[in-house]
Each structure stands twice: as structure tokens, then as C-alpha cells.
Image (cartoon, rainbow, N blue to C red; front, side, top):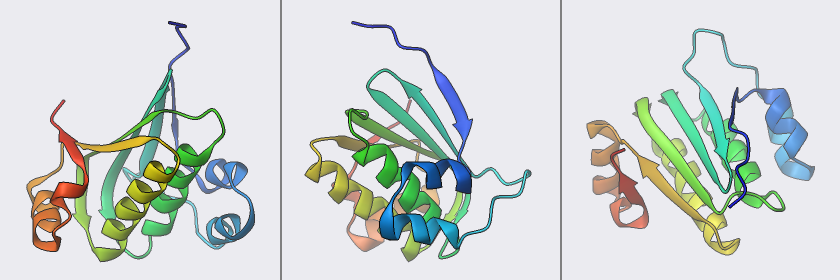
Length: 142
């Protein structure tokens, strides 16, 4: 197994935009950048796994950035086989945020990749249960 370097970076509009083309790029072009005190999103990559750490509120304003970040991670050529979304710092998620997660799951399946949720909060678990989406994701408590 090749030991690839570990890297971490904060997701920003420019970072995500650099990975996208076409309609997805135009969506990101219309978004503002995150404030420095926002827990936001961070990507950590190690070999064939990417961990996307999501924090704060995931609502209609922020869901497009999550969708774009996950789409870029899933669809990049030679990208990771496994995408883990750490939602431990997620304080709120509405239907737009949930839709971004479900869309990412579908895209991952289409590309032969897996996506899982790590450390969901009680609120997020309740959202998954109430919407019938709890069976769509493998959930880990690492």
C-alpha cells in the first residue's frame, strides 16, 4: 500500500470552484465565502478515503456548498473510494441539507464509491429517522 500524505484544508468557494465545471460551478459562483468563525466544512484526505467535516447549520443557504464539495470529492477522476462525512459539529440540518446528503449518496453509488456518516448528533439522527432516510447511510461512531 502506498502511503500518501495526509492533508487538511478548509472548504472555500474558490477551492470548490476550482474542482467544478458547468452548472455546479455557476452555483458556487453565486455563493459567498464562509466567515472565519464559522465551523464550516473541512476536507481531510488520506489515500483512498476523504473525511468531510461539516459543522454549524446546514440550511438552504449552505446546502449548495455542501452539495458541491461532496460532488467534487465523489466525481473527481481517481478520487477516493470512500467518503466519510463527519457531522458531529452539525448543530442544525433542514430538508435542503438532508437533500444534499441524499444526493451525494446517489452520486457515490453511481460512481462505485461509498459514503457514510460519522458521529451524527441526536437532532440529525432524529431527522434521518423522521424522514425515513436512516437506512440510506451507514453510520459510524469513531
